[in-house]
Image (cartoon, rainbow, N blue to C red; front, top):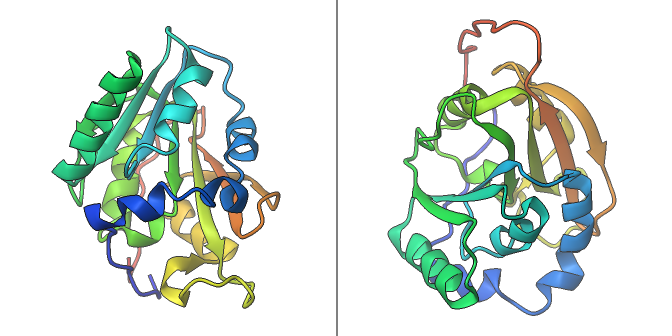
Length: 208
């Protein structure tokens, strides 16, 4: 794979995830528009943290849609459940995943969003293979990752990813690169799609 895996942010990072400056730094409205949601979709917020994006996506998919906020940490899931109850949001479901399997239903998901999460996956090939299985044909995966190519982005190198690295790793699991958007101050928005035609078998490459 050729890169160091970053440590997963624990519940102690919730104040950072909920910081007031995040709206200016990450421009969530731009991200939400890039998702091109029409309503009624099943969206997975993988590594949802405290639900920063979860509860912004929920109105976009509407009552006919659903947001699965997937986390491997019980404290994060409890935070999401408490917030859903407090906000009276009925289309958000907190779901427990593992380091190797997000535990998603097969061919049932329209879109998976990962915000500064992919670089923390301890088993990226295994997780992305499961995600591909969960996507409907034509379903999408959208990554936000800090730009490794830009030395001026004030984030440790282990928390950055290059476009080429992500493209290479997604090709290995059979996801097609659709576009890269550079509309955020610090992060790439990378969009991949599960091909509509045919279910191909992809072997794990050397080094993954």
